[in-house]
Figure: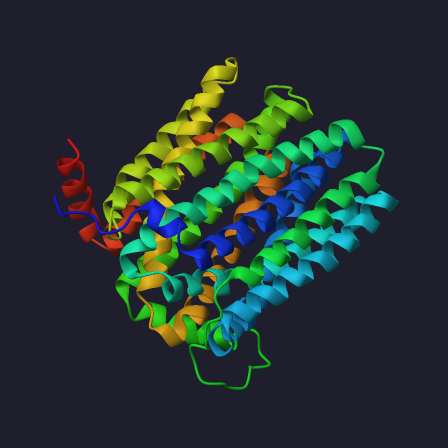
Amino acid sequence: MTKQVGSYARVLKTRSFLALLVTYFLGAMNDNIYKIVVTLFAVSQGKAHGGALSLAAVLFILPSLLFSGYAGHLADVHSKHKVLMITKTLEIVIMLLAWWVLDINNYLLMVSVLFLIAAQAVFFTPAKYAIVPEILPTEELSRANGLLEMATFVAIIVGTGIGGILMQFFRYQVDIIAFVMIAIAIIGSVCSLGIKPVPAAAKPKDMHGNPFKEIMIGFKRVKGDRELLTTVLGISFFWCLAVATQITIILYGSEVMKLGDDGLAFLNVVVGLGIGIGSILAGWASGDKIELGFIIPSCIGMAIGALLLTVAASSMWMVTLGIFILGCAAGFYIVPFNALLQERPNANEKGVIIATNNFVSGCTMLVSAVLVGKVFDEMLGISAQAMFFWIAVFTLVMMLALMRLLPSLRERAFFWCRNNE
């Protein structure tokens, strides 16, 4: 076995990456505080049905389709450090607006603020991922992505927990809820100052007025690289599955298990904990390379977790186990794909390639939200257990598609499993 050069300790000692990690964590945590507050508001007002959940999901996804091209352009032709700082400042403004909509108690305006939160995240994300190879060596990318993905889902856990507590104790004192979110946004903005300034990766050029022009440029690059195409499709599937699972878990908990606010929050915490643990283990197991051997076993693990949920509704511990398995396998699945997305494009195109990936992911997430929430739940009346069955089937079908698109995945999975017997 090749001796590993890097380690998690080495990554975390890199001051700039640590600042990026904390900045991102606080922002993701704040987003999830607000999202769970809005979700629990919907539950309390009898709005936790597929259509209302789909509306919230659609408004959260739509900015990925509208603004990804602009975001990728800015990340390439401007300092990523500057882009990160400006977007963090916008988070403060959005949380001030959230204070107002919570105060007037209007659900439609509440989910509209989700659109603004998502738009801020769209401009933050390409710069966040594209700056990682500029502040860390290539052999640390898998570990860095393990930490970033762990931060994502620990933020879900903590944000969901804080949001649930705030709603439990301060449901009728929205000023306190808003103060917490505004304070977190300010702290995150201050932390962004610790990220190392980096020069622009590409020469200055005019931004296209057409928001899809940059995306089309990215598409042409992705189509010409089979490994990059597999990566984009693989990541898009992950986020498609994430939206379907999130909506289905809420329906499963509220309609099948008859859980209250605390129970729904707990289920979201479990899936976030699973993905966080899976991500950090994937970064550790990858060593100094990008290990695509995880992908096939991870798909099988996600399918097993989803299938367990089709028969587990009568047992809370089995539900918890199924959700945890699904989440942990998803964490193993996403880390190598994210690392490859950062490593493979040229330095002057990382932003636009990541933005193209975000656009494709946004499209699949939008389709997923409408199908699961509106079509399957409201129009066809498909039960949450049956939805988990189809999630398992879709995962296995996607696994076969990825293997066909990139046959080396089979060999990498075989050698990884054999080396870890």
